[in-house]
Image (cartoon, rainbow, N blue to C red; front, side, top):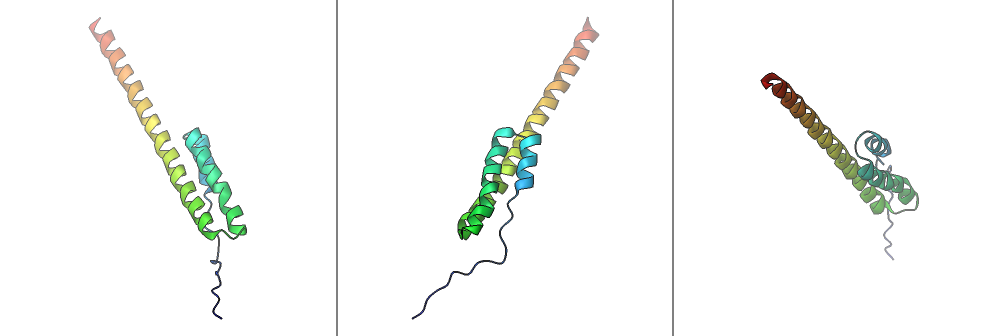
Length: 97
């Protein structure tokens, strides 16, 4: 009888927990929390034998960390542009009065 054994890969996928925490604190709280949730699932799914689930959770943690980072950077750039625009407007308003 041929039985196929499910072989466990050598090591668990990265959980990206550090990146998830950093992007939560420094960039975008809501998307960072989603990343933390997925990052926390990686090791528990791995230990339970759900290797595909662990890989999917790892991938999702990475994606949401990047989304959080992108949103944080975008908001910072928009804020900087708004501050610069207000500064230039104030400078020119004072010049003409």
